[in-house]
Image 1 (cartoon, one colour):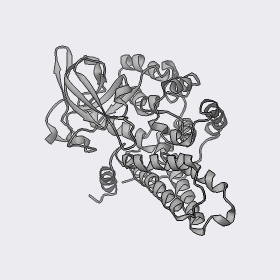
Image 2: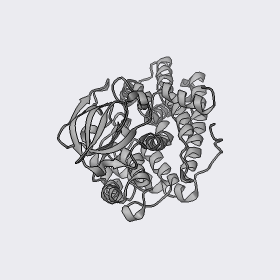
Image 3: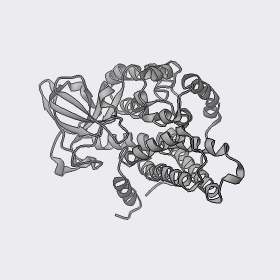
Image 4: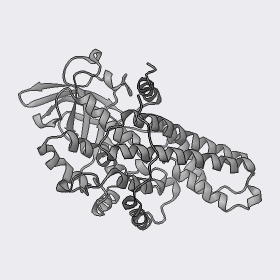
Length: 385
């Protein structure tokens, strides 16, 4: 069954960091238009990530002995919330900070921790996630990419798809089959760290409707990995990847993908005479605020479970499903609202931001697990299937 999420407040030590983060963003994002800031966690800026690392805000939940700040998930919540709400380009360090680093810290060997974690905390290396495959999608248990044990370590063959920023990452943590077949479902799966510069690895970009190309296909043809590529224990990949997905699905990024559009629209409305704003627009603003407040409270409650050392897999799936729906509907609500207003000289920046978010919104329900997969998990958690 799903655990009961209790209402939680952010602790004072996390809130006190907020103003410092805002000043940092103000300094580094001066004069960046909203149509660019709307890309935020798809915005890959290595220099910006390194500046965040210098401030101690990359790998901040990782242990101090590996270069992290040793802080709690609440602190990371505040930093992520501020970065996304202002549209900071966080994609470079994003995955390593959010899940690859914590995964290695939890399940990796001492050698893996000593090698990878300091580099993550300095934003020297970037990670991507190798989960989805052709004909598998978000059904991770049906994957066919296989690693076979040999005298040198692991020989990897197969393909991953929809891999965000693989073309700009140094490493991938891949979920692969190390025993059995795809019919065995979640049995025999393991996680391996793959150096994407290794012989036999081919990365091909996938261009989306916006013209951006952050998704990729990744092919493995006789890629030889060493023994220490394995994270945790062989065959434990399913449990590990579900713990990893709890990190991925529970954060404020699941409600703030469209937040720059919302702020840009509200800023436009503030320039209008009050009498020019119709009642339906006022009601819509109230609806958005109510939904956003409730979803944010859910995210904080899930963060509280992470802070207690728990792995809220089902709670994170529920939040991700609801948050993604809100993010996608928000764009359509604002589009409809703009279309229903009288011609009042709509700002060009607002229109460009709207067009971008309309085009990219379908990907929101691909990343982190499709809606169908998430709802299946929720149904099982409620004992409905």
